[in-house]
Image 1 (cartoon, one colour):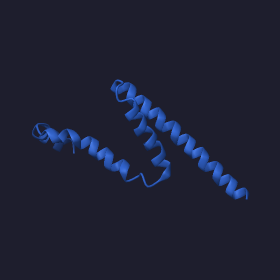
Image 2 (cartoon, one colour):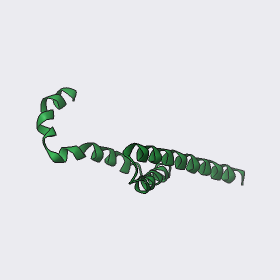
Image 3 (cartoon, helix red, strand yellow):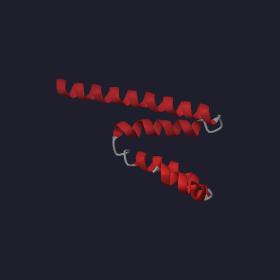
Image 4 (cartoon, helix red, strand yellow):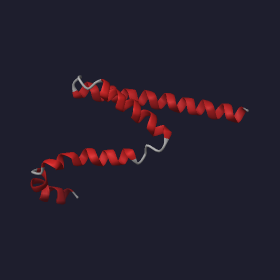
Length: 90
């Protein structure tokens, strides 16, 4: 794949729409996983954080979105674990 990318890189790189390919690949990968609540909660938190920090620099916005996603994922996981423990105890 690297050889093919090197061979056609100049041709594909000249197409403006080719800049969207990495974002589309990541988007397709993430969207297919959003059916699981463990992925949906952190993805939503990261997305909301990205919208809230749109005026910040890209580095700051990226770090804020990552932290928001991680914290939301941890909270959702702990809540799910606690609910399972309560269901088993009942």
